[in-house]
Length: 301
Image (cartoon, rainbow, N blue to C red; front, side, top):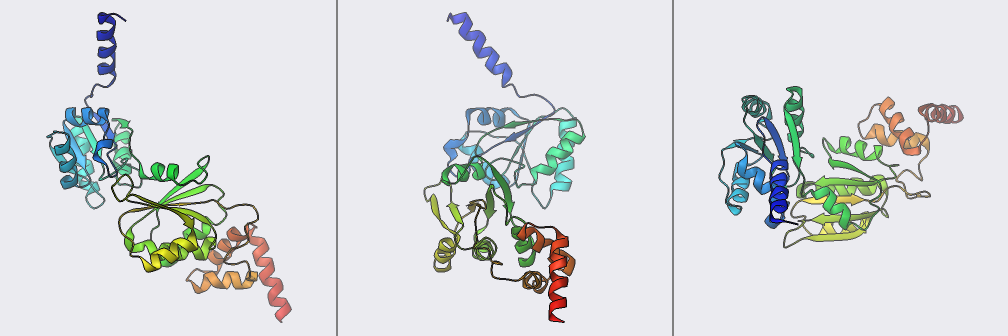
């Protein structure tokens, strides 16, 4: 290759990575180790007009590490409506903006999802600078199947709502990925044991890419036993094995259909919702559950 060819290749690369006006850049940032920030991410953060950050204090540390100084706009769950409109105005005026979350890929279990939707509704170009993602990092370390998987993120709502969502996943055959905060960890593991059975394999991933990184490959009962004694600390990714043919440790395996429905009604679900969930758990149509209940009632009469 001649010197001229080398210069042309360099120019092609620079043109391809040029920061464009009126463009929203989703920039993935380290989930723990600052050295994971990519060369392209540094270039974009250095050249955009503004940076929208979940927490400007955290982002300031990252920018200082890379020797970058840029105007920032706070953008998070509690101000996304107001800040989102302001960011769109800046983009429509011809400015470029990088969106970053505190750690990982923006818009994944993150209010950035709303900003991306708002930008596309306004015909604003959106592109991604790929990089760290806690869910994929944990999956790759889990030693569970990576061929097919689903991402659930954080379980939300009351205990009963969380239980209902887990129950809907009872027969999911793909590997399932959850995020969890330390203060909810014990309850989540209790609900998972109740729903999926004690023997379901899991990988509990904590403080990924940090000095105290920890991956516990165990069963749900093993994880619950550990965190009953040890205080949960740090942010968690729970990777759960999918349902396997022949699984027989379901929480309802020794219940009659009527008892199964009653289990959900006592947890606060309406009879209709309890029947629906029981049908999902058992992999049958709702009509089968209604028929079983009707027959059981006739027999008792």
